[in-house]
Length: 417
Image 1 (cartoon, rainbow, N blue to C red):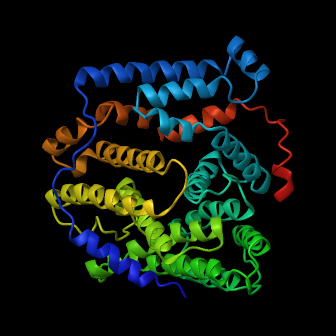
Image 2: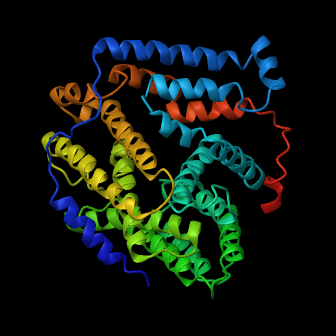
């Protein structure tokens, strides 16, 4: 079994030795600069919307998918969110363009019942696995395991997060899924379980159990972590240290499984580095989902905090922790690692700052004003756009895929499903 407990101990020490001071950011923005970027944001929205009707729609349909949208998206990322040229080369490379389209069509073919929001949720994990492929100098592609593991999320998370499903039913599901991960063949109780079991078959086809035992160890760990996390729902008698351990285990194990399903084998140093990256992403998720967790009475490291000052200190500490955790990924020897790590850091920190702006009721006006300086868009503008269209990233995801004719023929998509 993988030595994940030592990884938790390692990153707990980093967390406890961290600082609560406000992080130094590379770039700050004046109110004038923010309003200028907001104007560019609105123009981008108008242009993207225009490609869904009239002459622009005909022009779009007659062009190759992405040839019009991606130059526009390049400008959007560069001029509004200040992604650097070498970072944009990664985001908008031909490899990433293709894998996104390929994943979308595979997902629609495998799971026509899933909404675009669910597919976007799955694709976010596929992008993490694609970044690990880059770190390991592997081809950036949607392998059977990349597809299967990413698709597990919308199925399992939606079931486990559904308040209408009892805790006992969730435990029973977790038990049957654990049996399937261990190679047993329990009968699926519903369509969701049937789909999940099909996804496990894709792991088994790419990674035979006798040749890749650590791949399955990593899956057992994330399943164990998911099961333990159920204890955080409607439970107030778990101490803060245990809550943190479950949070770190769940986040680290998730991305550790990403790594094994990408590569089949990892060194201990690579395991630990990927585990830390997963913890950082879990901290981001908890910050983004504060309201939902509060409404669902789910314990997180944030709900253990008392007082606004402690929450603000948590945000600062999370950013410092993330920078140190991402720095451990330098053990990988992929091409353009410096650009990739700066891209990952820039993206996560923007989302952390955005999460603060979207939840002003949890912070003091002084902290909001301090952190807003490091956002390219004013918090009020971000909240307005979120109220209009939900997640900005999901809105852009939809705009890109809406331009691709449904009859587009992707031969690779049919070879795996």
